[in-house]
Length: 170
Image (cartoon, rainbow, N blue to C red):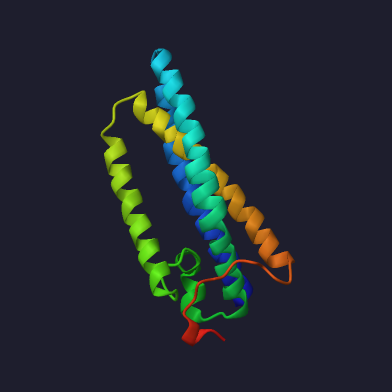
């Protein structure tokens, strides 16, 4: 049951991110149907660099992806029906997590929802440029989840903590 949960957790998170990449790609493609000026190309370069660094490297590679892999490995070793059933949510830290992790997970999710609503109000090609930056960051995240998951399951000691409550650790 633990292996099913761990795989479901990782694949579920990757599917969630991949579906966002798919949806955002169409808006990003729509931006290229318009005529662009110099400021659009400069903005594209800035957004791509910023999102690759801030979202891809800092948020995903340094924080989210190692935690998803660590929590999937924890789930492999400590399965329960509820954790396995909701493995993607478990791996993202929405439950059976430290108080700080739950607050962070819910706060980041709320922030992302707010940003999505705000970016939808932006006109093209600006919206498409922002969406393309998000696609770059999310793609980086998907790849880093895969890499960290492979590391977590092939090495004896994985250096990242699953951030589960102390009193319930087995």
